[in-house]
Image (cartoon, rainbow, N blue to C red; front, side, top):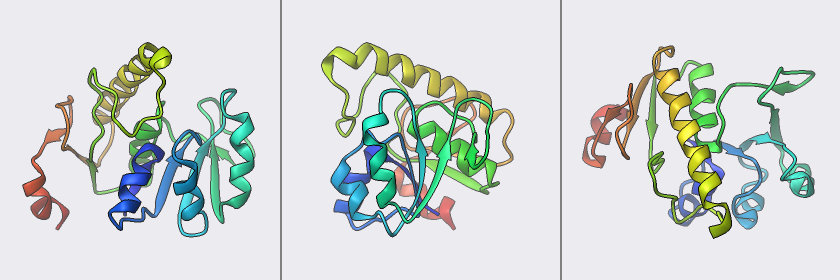
Length: 169
């Protein structure tokens, strides 16, 4: 199963890959979100910075709301802090056998598909650092095998793309 953070959605769609699940706080490419609104399950995190974008949720056929606090009604807390690490927590929650991170670099670099403004760069890097620490914590708790194609992380096996066939099968 393919779970994607919303910042990866546009390049995935451009390469013919439609994820079954999209983890989003609605700050990704809006056209990409709309394009697959009826095809994927959306795991949406609402917060004070995206209230004006919540109307997008009405376009989604299948949607699950999330929180970072105590779950209530139909709002869930699977864990995580950024869209990317929330996706890993989601996969672990549903006991995925293997979780492979593609293009999720929790280092000192902000990816080109992130919509981060220059003025928000410092905050974004702090969020990535928090996401990384949560994933390293999760690695000590989960039963899932964890792999990454990006920078090394504690508890994740670093693999080259050429090894994916072996790991996926």
